Amino acid sequence: MDIIGSSIELTRIIFLLGAVLALLYKKRFGVTPGGIIVPGTLAGIVFSSFTAFLIVLASAGLCYGLYKVLFGSIALTRRWSSLVNVSISLVIGLALTVILDHTHQLSQELTMISFITPGLISIGARKYGFAKVMGGTLAVTAVCSAVAWFMALVLPYSMLTYLTVKLAGTTPLLLDNPYITLPISLLSAILVYYRFGIRGGGYLIAPFIAVVIFNSPIQALLLFAGVALSYLAVHTVQRFSMVIGLERFVLSLFCGYLVVTLMDFLAITFAIPGYTSAPLVLIITVAVLTNDLTLQPIKDSLAKGFMPTQIASYVTRLVI
Image (tube, rainbow, N blue to C red; front, side, top):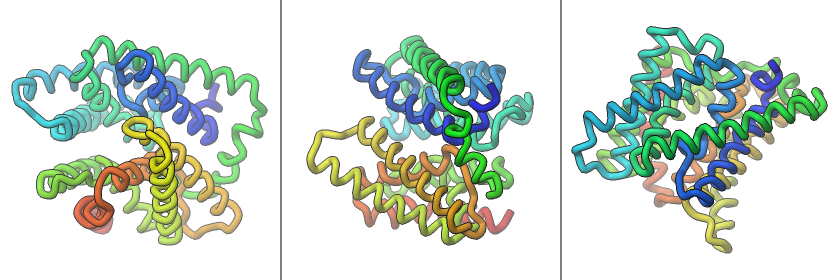
């Protein structure tokens, strides 16, 4: 069913459903099924290219094996272990894209997210065991895929394509030369953490923000205002509840969904110049930045984390 892969609305719903189910799976079985964003991402890949789906799963096994062989005997902290796993995953993803050209059926956005998916699975496998994590990942992904199929069958076509049709005239959010911009983004995040011990606002989102800033300053201002509102919302919820850890990140994803959807409607209504649309990556951007601002001192998070990685990505964007 082509609508599952082409509908912005359905893509976002399944992605958020995957996050909720991953959280519930973790609470019920004590195992994170590959990371909060993994099941929804894999469900999207399944409907776009089953071959790519199998390659991503195989890459997860390869990433985990390489990590065990190369770094298994080194006492790395949780954050350094995550950075190493994501680095291995990115290298594998870029290499396989060149060798196999397996992502030709995926959107660029889904391709970029699939580059870190094996690393996220490997991070969980290091803690809980590869079989348990992969089993949970496949189970939650299967449920997401079944729900997507059901929704595509029973919901009106117009309900699932309103935003998709209205945003058809906007420019998709695409990276130029991702083989350069993504490694530089990850290297910047690693250097920031090494120098300041600060999370740099995600591993690979800085290049996408740089594209938004370059193409549409108005959209960039809306995005940053949305991050601020998302932070205030999550911070307020935390003051009156025990929302922490994965629950906080899932809440941040929903805030990101509301922010980006509102931006889309504003773009439709007022025709924002240079507006770039994306089903998922801007939602992840809002969620990651919100999460980092919540976990770290705001001044340090912005000055020592976000700004250095963003400047590096923006300069790279200008040069290439």
